[in-house]
Image 1 (cartoon, rainbow, N blue to C red):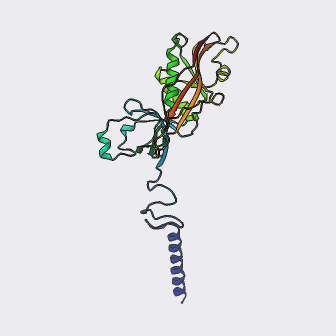
Image 2: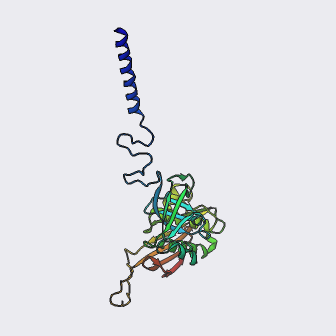
Image 3: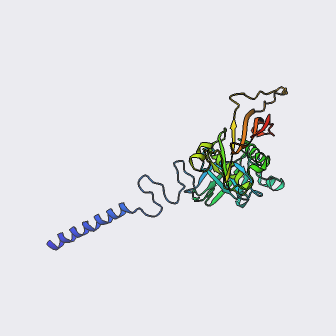
Length: 297
């Protein structure tokens, strides 16, 4: 009798241990409490490819045929700048075109376009940053705005006039803080402008460079560098449009304008100015700008 009781006790202990083990380790493919089976797509708003991220960026520079294109996060901070080999991505699409049509057109990415990138979420630590494994890139039809391209053109035009002011400099300052560009686009334009001339641009105001020891604030001189800046002034003197007549039923284009001053500064007695500049865009496409007056000091 004692042996029979001992046998029953041992049997119940074994069953209890098996039940506990089953609760702790669900079988392969079975959902954990509140989870999703491992062989089924994940839910809850996440992509079916775990870890993949999709974000939209502004194309600042297309590089050489799309190689090392420069992108800025929409409304991001100064560190939200990336490089991407667009044509190195297998899944590349252009919104509004079929795959067959894409092969028939002669195109290259245009600065100002919006670019949707899907990648594994990892970012290489560099400046500009580099995406990890990119799954797809889509060039979007809507949202085009190439104000970034316009201001880069202005900076390069300033570089060329009275070139003695920036001849031989090893430091380059750029101040776009008083423009309507988001911080990420300001940083990307400054970087692209610096690369145009083989320099790593630094962002900051005149006072920032004085405080940083680059500009001699007492003698008003930047020995090794030059500060390029653009300041929008349309709130003080708004741009007035002369709108063309439209055919009844046609949608009115989206016109906008900007007024700005631009300057490069080497010293209190060495500076060049573009004053009272104006530019107009149609549906986000900015044309050439006009300079109201030029001055030198």
